[in-house]
Amino acid sequence: MADIHVALLGFGTVGKGVYETIKAHQSRLRAILGKNVKVAGILVRNIEKHTLPEDDILLTSNFEDILNLPKLDVVIEAIVGREPGFSYLKKSIERGCHIITANKEMFAYHGNELLELASQKNVACGFEATVAGGIPAIQTLRTLLNVNKIERIEGIVNGTSNYILTKMREDGVAFQEALQAAQEKGYAEEDPTNDIEGYDAFYKAMVLSQIAFGEQPEWQTVRRKGISSVSNSEIGLFSEWGLRVKHVISLEKGVRGLSCSVKPVLVGPSHPLYSVEGVQNAVSIDADIVGNITLQGPGAGKFPTASAIVEDLIQLNVNHGCYYEQEKNVRFKKDLHHDWVVLTNQTHVFLPDSIEVAGRVKEALFVNAKEKDIERLLEVYPGLNIYQLYGQMNKEFFKNILLSETRPERKVASPKGI
Image 1 (cartoon, rainbow, N blue to C red):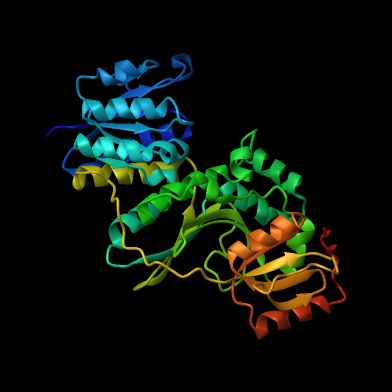
Image 2 (image 1 turned 45 degrees about the horizontal axis):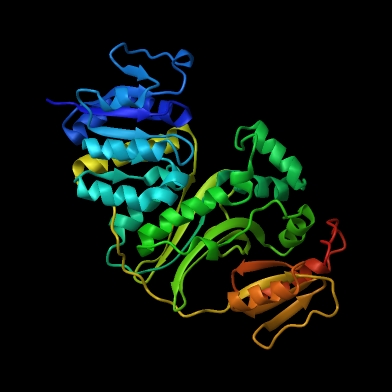
């Protein structure tokens, strides 16, 4: 019985998780694949920092040593940044190896090129681990929703930001204190910019867009906003109204083309992302037949990410071929109106006729408008804090808000206006 020979590029948290998972589940892998899975080589930056329990595994800091392994079937990449991961995977494909990556930034930039090259060389490309860790979002979109037409995708795909927003609400602390707690727990890096400013979520949104809609939006058209400007006073105010701030990616293909946003939004109790707390991730998919499907689970970490990589290993060996589809069934939607909460204590904010005011509660205007009209409003009043509201503004909604405003025990300070 021949073995499947695997090389790991990177032996940090994810790489070690993959290695340990393969070792611990060898009998299960053999039962599914009919072969043993053998780690033949591991690429590291500094050999002196690593030791391996198996002497027959090549440990090297030179990628050419990996390429020159006599037997090599699959290359698994878990390196941070666009390079050298992209170049390594190109060379791996050219040698005739299947590839699997967990590198969302690299894949957002170079995924198309890798996928096209893999198709030309008749090898497979797995990238489930680039989005939401152990949640099988890509598998669901690629293989389980072929007849359904995808209408919309929303997701919480960065556990660091979700943890910070959850802690701010639950403990009533400011952003910096919540960020420090995330760093102490290892959820946030020393430089947390990619997480808190939405770059990590943006890259994941681009990967999901390619799978769901067969294309990515023009990157410069994507509204990307992080969570560093969200105040604890705002979170406290929204909590009294039964709303939660979540950092959400949103993808939708409408008559104006493919739209994408990465931003803090307000989520009501009826929305599937409302209960996604802490470091959990979730991807919510709306399709025309099945309706809504929400996948929730750990979005990062040693074994959740390793799980996605090993499941890719199964798929590309059982269903040989390029792990990708260029076109999906997509339902084009009209340029719809959405509900928004505009925070301001200014008396005179001129609203055009295209923005309908649904109600006002002290420092908040509740409006219904198209996103393009909100963008124009922000051009005129750049200091406004505006949150899209995921949930319906009906009579019961306003009744609950008005009840919360009359409670004498309210202690949270109102947010500052413009």
